[in-house]
Image 1: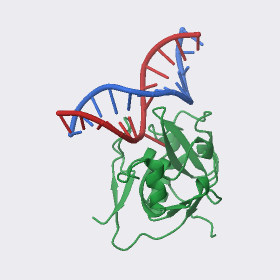
Image 2: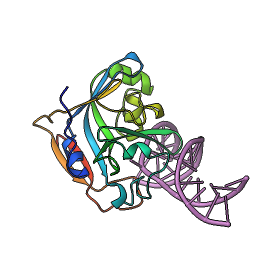
Image 3: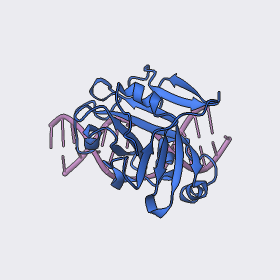
Length: 181
DNA sequence: TGCACGATCACCT
DNA sequence: GGTGATCGTGCAA
């Protein structure tokens, strides 16, 4: 596979990864999705970032090399997946919020226990792909979770909006969505 | 050792 | 559209 282009500022990367594909083979089944919604988190310059107050045991993988997966627990019960960008020691990450299922939908439905609202939230997306805490710090060029660069279909448009679900730095336009308008 | 908080989800009306 | 559930982590004393 070709190397992933994760260079540039975190918001530039966030916009770039829209349309990229995520292939999960967790549990021996293949689930493939196309990213349609992400959020950029800018590390030590971003009060909303987990890494804002420095490196801790939880966010350690956020300080790893680009392409690292950072998985954290939200509200004690849900898993959320982030793609680490930037350079080693520069904690920048892109939160994977939403995606479109390209293949393996029946597997996702079984994993989620329902057949609608499958990937419209960070926790749901993580569950749909079989991502859990033991995939934290996983490098996304290797199985069982592989990130592949790709292009958005022509009928998709990228939109930048304020981030949601957080209490700080809500004014930044660091949330990127891709839709057919 | 104890306390406060959170990048959410599911269910209710 | 609004509200309750739930628990690990980080920080202070």
